[in-house]
Image 1 (tube, rainbow, N blue to C red):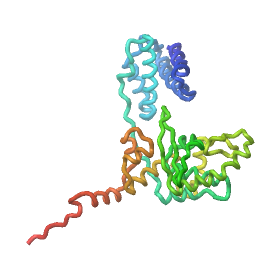
Image 2 (image 1 turned 120 degrees about the vertical axis):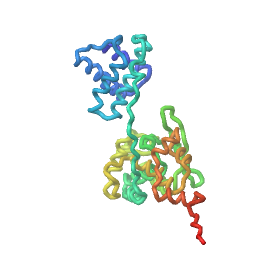
Image 3 (image 1 turned 90 degrees about the horizontal axis):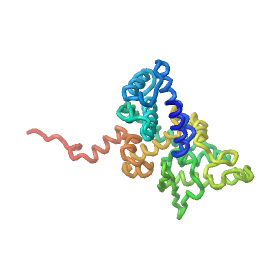
Image 4 (image 1 turned 180 degrees about the vertical axis):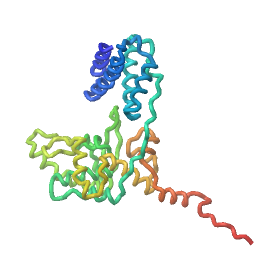
Length: 309
């Protein structure tokens, strides 16, 4: 079975062009599956692999790992079995009939608008990196971007015409594009950064990233991990919770817009969600807003009791 595993991993790297991290995760999960049966004195061969063995393995893990981890391991087994079936090493996909464990979907809590305002205004405006940080935080919140979308932006992705600034965002596995507008605060911060940006490139002496919008201190493209560090730098000054990452700004953007009356489908377009149900998961209506909408919209909400004679 381990020979088949190596062939499968080679196929992931070659034909499917999976990343090094993906291949490493598949190897770890599938080797753990094989070691489980080795420890029970049952050396596994493709012909012996069946649905009962997959279920038994997941049941043995269920008390030690969460449903998300179980789902990942089952997904790896399904892919491996699909590969074995393609090469007729097995008669059926033994993992396909095993149901995915239910994963909890807790709604992330969006920070209050006052907290976010304090965060984006925390960076100093008298340093080059401070101007960059202000622009980065304003864009993350103002456009509701994922951090990888923000650091992938290039100068040519900015549309600044007649005082209106938009960003062209590439997202998803197929590099889909969407146009995202920037509000006044985010646009002003970004324009200020575009003035300061050449100073970082000058320090790089031709070795930086001349097309990248957001640069690090050495003139290279900012990374997703660096975005998290920027957030950490100003967290204390704003009162942002310690467990809130860059995605909290994206969620805050959507939630604050929804609370102010924005249409859910408009928010879906802004965030680049393929499904409206995904947008609903990332945006929740506060009770106060819900009651206001009910009072304004329901014909019986404001009806007065009739006086009895």
